[in-house]
Length: 257
Length: 257
DNA sequence: TTATCATTGTGTCAATCTAACATAATGATA
DNA sequence: TATCATTATGTTAGATTGACACAATGATAA
Image (tube, rainbow over all chains, first blue to last red; front, side, top):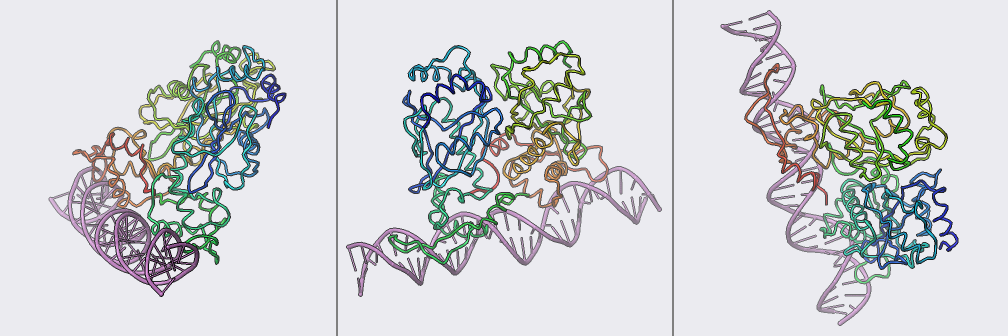
């Protein structure tokens, strides 16, 4: 967690360190308890949550900035990342929010400070293995936790809008590219994969047709083990065929033209 | 076309007018002579072409900035626009280029000038009716013209990359959303629509299967007229059913889950 | 005037895919 | 040993797809 000294430094010197008027925000999806979850910060100075985000260092790529933020919030490297939209409406950022927050932090923020400018934010979503994440709050939040999506908590500024657009993108991509490799543990069961699809889509699927269709893609392989420690019949374990999976990521799944 | 006075003003005062470090670039697609074309500027100070682009006014939405640029280059309002990617690599913009260009223009550009900063650019593509466009160059170009895509001319900076990504996006979207309403005249023939699909995909399609599939979407309706003034058998004219078309734009075409 | 020919309109058919549904196997719990 | 929730696998009719055939049209050539 960033110290107050660091925060003060960012407020006062950020203008020299970061690209001005541009931020990145990240919708981090995880899968747990048969539901899609999103990692959110509980803001310190307002009773709302916020998406993890940050700024781009002057010699850093936008993707790198997001990876850096992701590492800080989850402890993970090499996360699956996808840019999905850039939000450029003039009234989307809330200048008062920063003023209020810094006032409560006891940090001076004067007129003309870089944080009081309008910001365009680049939206990314990340897919992570829930069980590998160690959520970590930042300097302006009191906690970092997983939250359900339906309904999602009230978020600051236009973050609900950003979250919805991320989910929408994910839903669309489900139809023409493989998903799961980054959200599930290495070994998983068919019902788990199906539940993942169902929670993303928000609707139930037929078990048998789902299995046939997924298998027809050839991106997962059945292992010779079954899941242990479960009630009822033990389901087989599967794992992704990473080579085929990456091919499908590149070439797409759905029948196009 | 912007006068030199305006250009000088933008160079010297742009820092106050526009969001810093952010630009927009637009890949404008048109359809003519059975081929997909892209509208490019021939740069005045280097033997390369460039995508039409611009900057975002301090109280303007990113989309509005693109519409403004589009209006200037094509003379058209209400163009179909789609944001497809934001390019945020640190070395993508070329500071020397602006220096050289301004030197040749005889406009002073001093160290610290806003144009010499690194820029993140938001990429949009536009689909326009070729026959309605009146190409207009800008202050830094000597002409604005349609160009073929395969092969596309050499473009400045990372514009070839941007163009490729736009085309790739368009190709993918072809599989799950309707396209054509913005690229074709109000009345068009089935072969024309097919050629459009073929030029976007870069591969031939079966005439009969194409017709069956397109008609099954229910987004176009056959008119009671045939195209006149053509050699060989006169093909029927069709038009888009705008209501159904917009529904399909919203809900998607391909069978998902 | 008639034949030719490129092009368009329409149709067929087998193979494949899909949605909806049925039944058998498994293994913990009653 | 019976029950039960759950998983594994199968069936079938109908829709979709890919590959292809053939007739109709109307300008151009013979």
